[in-house]
Length: 188
Image (spheres, rainbow, N blue to C red):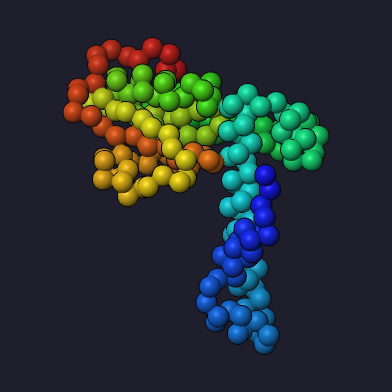
């Protein structure tokens, strides 16, 4: 499914802005054109991030580089070179911080909830990883789409966990239960 003309026009309106001030200035102001360029660049940067997140989410769901390249109308190699970068390195981190790797769309929630019983909760995420911090209470995790009622989530005690990873939002909330003793197995 591709974006229809109405959706593309909505995107144009968002970039342009709903106020008539910019439209009125465009005919005679070079600064207004520069403002429009800045807005378009911001939208481009955001959609580039969304594209990268969508590709990494597809990879986490075991979609092949060949299929991703085909969808992007580029080669498998080009897709892998452009989007296959490894996540940033976490070195010299505090003892209560860990990076969980090897996570996929299929196992990340069960793994986060498993380590959450030992007090670990997600604070950052990316392709195939979550950075977790240890606490003295148990934590639970949830993954939703962008369509979730964020006000309801906040009322229910959920906190945003890391950054959105298109199409997902990640959430964590502490429980009243003390963290289980010992180290959670398989956290590097």
